[in-house]
Length: 165
Image 1 (cartoon, rainbow, N blue to C red):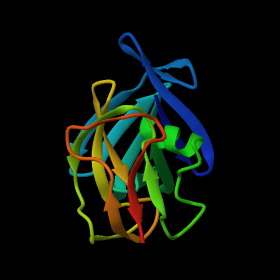
Image 2: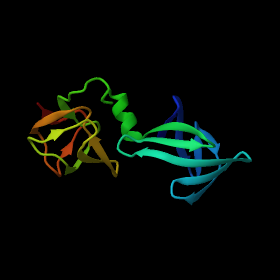
Image 3: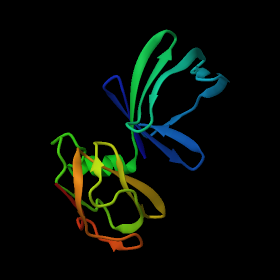
Image 4: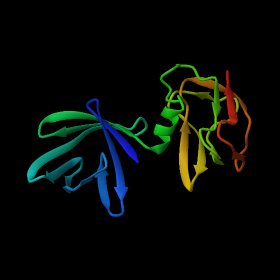
């Protein structure tokens, strides 16, 4: 499932067999790539011209101009929604103290080492869970003090992975 927040309005996007569902209702459209960042959409017999104006892939925030009106779209995938549900969305504090495993999984790749300075949004490690690679990002700024696991280790939900100064 994917959640899209468009101009403060929430939408749930999922897939059922071979069709897209928007808020659990079938969604059909004709979407064509015209040129770089320019698209043509037909939905419910209405024509729309769309342009990707700005894309921040790290934060998953996009600005799209549709028929002259700019819309801000914030996307959240399963991992983002799980972290948010666990209270780890990063909005509580600008400084990070420690990182615990958000779900059981396997440490696939460690992206930082002890002593590294990290900023909010930096990828700390890749955690494989349910055959999916999940980039675990820093929820705040800090300096890596101690890493409690190694690449290849299995972790349980809530297990301490690293500490920050």
